[in-house]
Amino acid sequence: MQTILALETSCDETAVAILRDSNGHSGSELLASEVASQIAEHERFGGVVPEVASRNHLLHAPRLLERAIRTAKINIADVDAFAATSGPGLASSLMIGASIAKGLAIGFGKPYLAINHLEGHLLSPFFGASEIRRNISLIVSGGHTMSVFVRGVSDYEIIGRTVDDAAGEAFDKVAKLLGLGYPGGPEIEKHAREGDPARFDLPRSMLDSDNFSFSGIKTAVRYLLPKLKGNYLADLCASFQQAVVDVLVRKTIAAARKYQVDLVTISGGVSCNRELRRQMRQACRQENFGFKSAAPWLCTDNAAMIAFAAMLRLRHGFESSVTAEIDPNLALV
Ligand code: KG4
Ligand code: ZN
Image: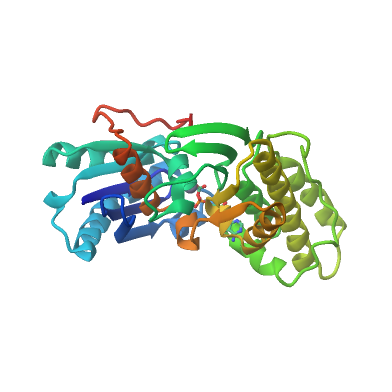
């Protein structure tokens, strides 16, 4: 049995989780998962301010750490390995979580694992399982949009990525244009539920490429807005959401066919979107592919996914040096 404590501080969420691995037989058990969001602090600046984010991580992390240990009913000396997100993300934010995890690893003489944030998302649809399966993984978050051929733990091939905005960024920017709150994804999804997705014909960019592009659709919404009168909010949200979902589903299914996998997974903040989940599941069923999405609470940034990635890596014999650097631009492969 192994207990792993992980910290996630790559952007504006401070998170700590404790995961217990039951030796691979029955998967793992989450003993604690704490997340402190800084949304309110950054909302007034209209975006994440790195200096504010890192100060908040420093403020929240020790409190969350204490709470996680209390909730998990363990002694910190019983933790078998300490992990932290080492990138990609904001340098000054990554430093806080990584420094705490390294300090604990050194202090207690235990292994340290530097985890790629994207690997955390990518493995999250398998959370709790003892192994992962070959699949096409779509990572869709506020910072990333990427399709990946997953052969196994740490065996990844990037198929396509966004050449401009991430899918979540498009949701956030369009929400801002429409005067909706931050983060934009849940706001747009809420209004879209009442709208007609076929009313506005918005562009589906780069359909013939493995890569993604979402800045064109944002621009299309910007030019369309001044021409609109009357009641259009719900229809525009629904049409925008449908255009993004169309692109994500079509490219993911094309990749699954090309790489001959029988499983599609989705993760990251945008994978909370119920229409995306529904349409991806439906498309997978038509093609006879299995479909797995991360549980909604695991879609947005959290430390449980980092602990899970660390657990799988540890089981596959990976460990990091405590001198391992954080890397704001860390690539998945
Ligand atoms: O994974 P995440 O928490 O942070 C990053 O690593 O970026 O993703 C946050 C992003 C935001 O852009 C947010 O608008 C989007 O995920 N998001 C959604 C939904 N919930 C969150 N996008 C569409 N529909 C949603 N329901
Ligand atoms: Zn993320």
